[in-house]
Image (cartoon, rainbow, N blue to C red; front, side, top):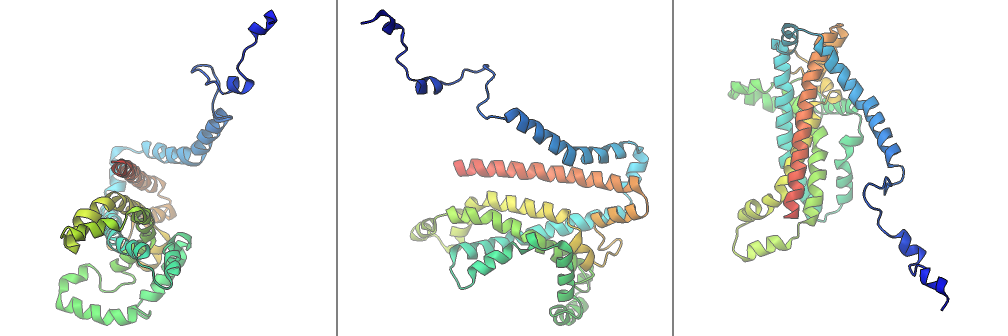
Length: 310
């Protein structure tokens, strides 16, 4: 054997290339990672962080007395109550009826199911102004539903005067705000629940019935614990979407101060009056609320993933 043959490495070039790169060698597994990360940070800073920081910096120039007067005036507090209360009510209604709709779409085959499933996404694609106009025409005094519902609701208010707090009509009153926020938030609950329902085997319900559980016990002890994480996530997403809604609400609410005026509309009103500090202060309050909601949604999603792993 030639002496030089002993110095030849028997490993092939492929084996040498497949050898793992030790840490600290400076080589990245993903090519272009540094450039991609830099572009991502620059894009987010330009589009998201800089505008949001400008709102906080603008508000920082106000004294505490000016800030308190801008965000705690009676009209603003009434707008908070309207925005958060109606958004919470709409998200609650979407959680109930969205669960029913998702269940029907997943578990029951029926003619036109694909059409109904496609219509669920309509609020995503439909401009909010178009949605507001359509709802106003439909539920107004002379609309198809409003003309039939108004006399019945007037009789109910006459029998129970406390119902007048809710509203004496649908369009241009509080029920209209609730209706618009429910319309735009429904897809978030349905689309969050559908994948979970598709993974939930019907055999669980059959086993529960075989063991003697009633239908209500099966729902509360077998199905709801599995659906609760996704349902809470859909509720939070629907609430967050409704809280920032503007386009559809302004057409159907009537925009009455102290009754149906929402915070986004009040911000626009202050801008039209050249009250930039007041508008910015309200924007900061809504930004903080949005950050809290985002944190809650992320925690719910983390809990949901952990729940499914278990």
